[in-house]
Length: 398
Image (cartoon, rainbow, N blue to C red; front, side, top):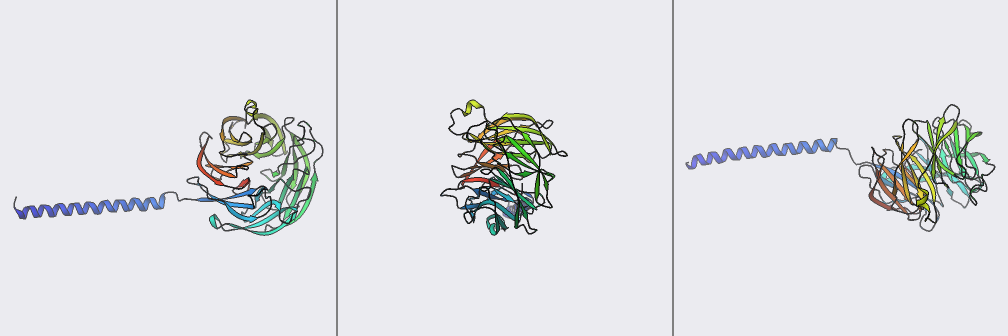
């Protein structure tokens, strides 16, 4: 082959290689652009943390959860207040409420939420005294007109009216619960209202009372921010009802018994506002609790899909996962998962249902777990952050 032919061949090969290279670069660029615009972007949701007393906690803390990876940011102080145990959010997400003390007097305190993500902060609006020893729990009704609180020490429920801008107007009621079951010595000598919330249709209010072994039911008038006695539902003697949640279908109610470490399942009649018991299932086998110096159930949540229920066990320091029978609403145990901390006073499931955050009150931790959407099983995500004396984990209105 002469030098001229060789030169032409090399030139042709060079052109072919150059063209192929340009085509390859073009493909890579299109793949990158397509991926950039079509792959799900990283998203974060706000996490609000209510805390108990102690030297480490200074008030309400705020952090974020990455909903793609399940990673938590380090919480920062959002508002300084003493003992803001439980939190609630206005339906429009613009206001946050806490039970705590600003001036040494137990109150319901209202804050304005400004910004989101790492820029989120709270600005104090106003507060109204609770009375009767202060509140343990609070809820905002779905219309954003009323807050109700449960007073554990005083054994009462209170109602508060809200202004249109979400600020607190006044306490409209304080109703004392009467009686006691006296089954468990030292814990059931008197009434101990422990949780307060509303039915999905906003016609009724519910107050599990640990001291009565009852869920006390009230009719609710949102226009007047007032409740009137309607009836009650019984749990097993010595159960000590603490918290409760409705199934998304509205057909069933799940009541967590603190003292018995069990979940009571009720059929719910929305028209009549009545609860009929159908099952009580332990959260932890009794033999596993024999060596625990302290044992107490604390929180219950229903997965957004309605397929699973979760409850927390203090002392045992686990979350119990239950499967929901979609025909009857009854529960069966899936597993018990260690929270990677101490004393799970509270936990919550993010709105997507992909992540469960477990708060360790005595370990001062908040740990992230992935939720298997098919089985309901929990897997520790190896994301755990400092959360001083965390006793309430909230994403938004409940």
